[in-house]
Length: 235
Image (cartoon, rainbow, N blue to C red; front, side):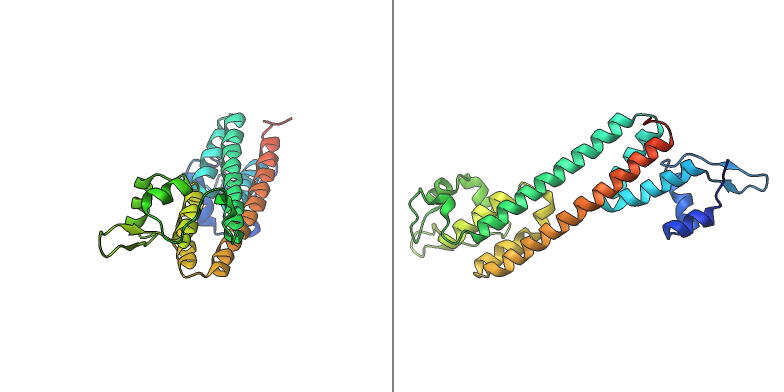
């Protein structure tokens, strides 16, 4: 049987030997045998685990990767694959939301609600009806600083414009995905300042990131299949 020194695997993966020991301590790598001098004896199986681990990190993150590899070690390949399937479905959902967001930003005439009457100034009830969003949600988004409608000086009622309509439609779309939460305020504020091109740029950059993660995930899946073949879970 061919054995590898820790330094050989570390060099191939461009990491430190201490990182290899960390992964082993996490329980995601089979415990290697020891030589008479106490050195670890890594095999092709360990190398396949390490390659899979490092490749999957970039597309799936540490927690998901470790969970998957623990199931693989237990021989439960199907559960491992279904975990991967769920993560890829989540990414697909993010892609759909990003595409919808970009389409909405390009919809200069608000054609998504063209079948409804759009006034220059509207109250919260009218806006809720136009956007199919509950008044309570609109108030919450105002509290969170996502939208800032003016107030009528006489009665204190909120006054909404077409800009707020676009913002609410964007928030309605963006809130469906965790990925966009960090970008949501930036996108909504650019709309408030009528910087649609900047909002498009943020969304397009998000799409680029999603595409990159998709490629990384497929690289990780490939290494996972290679690992499963190495340990005979796949014939």
